[in-house]
Length: 420
Image 1 (cartoon, rainbow, N blue to C red):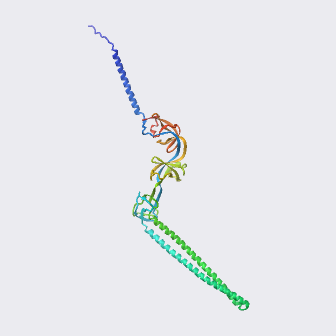
Image 2 (image 1 turned 180 degrees about the vertical axis):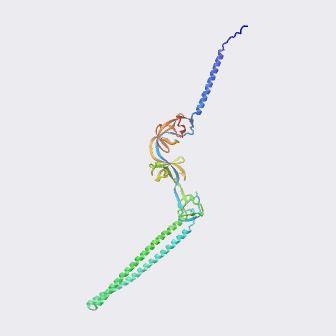
Image 3 (image 1 turned 90 degrees about the vertical axis):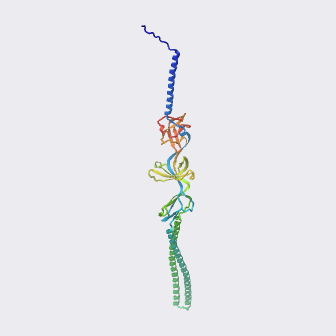
């Protein structure tokens, strides 16, 4: 048998062309799918921030205030603390915490029976001393009247005896009287003059004694009147009536409770005006002085003030100070509201600055992210003065740069972050 002869036939070029285009199309499709997958994966994995949550600040030229950071609490500018003026007990509570009070309103009813008895005793003693003073004064006036009469009589007697002695001396020269008679008359004249002097000296001594007694009585009466006025004042204070308008912020609320003298029984605050009591680290002790401007941040709003007092004592590394507000009646102020306080210690004008944001702990050299063509680019900058609202930029930025002031510390290892 003869072997079968086989014949190879050429493939049609059209078929080859179609096969080639199919292969190319398949490869292109695969590459396109891979490219799309890579792009999607790249866009999904690449770090980005949402433009809706970031905060930005445009670098500009302006003023920066270097400040001392502190914390503060809003307190009423005027607070009246009512203390018990006497040992007593609470009979009734007439007002409660939160009540608005007007001058003259009574807060508590205290037992004042012992205070009333003490006032009555003082008044009785004062009456007795005033009567004694009147009696001594009357006796002194009577003695003066008696002396005037006696002195007048003695003076008349002395004049009479002097006249008699003069007549006898004339008669003696004429031989009508003896020397013994003249001597007797002159002796009587001298005796009368001595008695008159003794009478006046005795009265003067009695008047000095009486005046001393009057002075002592007047001193005792003055002390008793002061004691009476003080007891009346204590009784008035024990009525627990307020002398200024305000709100009752605390009151002893237990009826029948025993209270001692000087115990606090109520506090009244004037909620129409406020001041700030602040605390700061003692590292700023050399910078914090009276008269420095202050910025008090309340509900994201800055209120101006000035440091009016600095407590020189430092406890546990903390110093305290007082700030008087420019507008102590601002409606945003409320008692016991906490606030951030920045004491302005230095100021620079016409410097490059950005707003202060959530930058964390600030250092002299730090990075920021600057917005450029939809991307936040990491830039090294050098800070100068740091205030509560602005930060001075010494280098790294230019006017008009848009800086992200949100907290970007989680991206600090990246050089750029996409902004969606």
